[in-house]
Image (cartoon, rainbow, N blue to C red; front, side):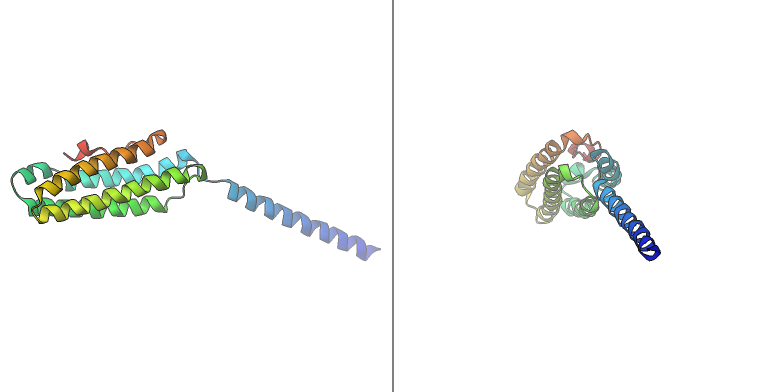
Length: 166
């Protein structure tokens, strides 16, 4: 009888430990990223990139007007590289499950933004002014689509504002 009592006490203790572990694991899984936490993690990435690209692209319009297209091409190439790194960092941030579709769409627009910047660099290098103009329009349109996708997030630096780079 004593052995059975000891066994059932041990079994009960083991069962309680297993249940406690399962509950802790379930609560850890359930403690997903909130929208506010996501914004708090992503905004510094965007701020750092925005400040870097403000410096990289400073005066680029004047550089183009002066006909220094190779210099402007280099600036756009550096901006595309910096922007691409930022997009990769943003992609690595855990997303709130409820916003995953919206955020993946946004990240797709950001990736396209990087591609357009890179293509502008190539067009400038090749002295294709017409292509540069059309890419500039495409960049603006794509930026508006990206911004519209995440308006409810109330981003500041993660919104694409081309006026920052004039």
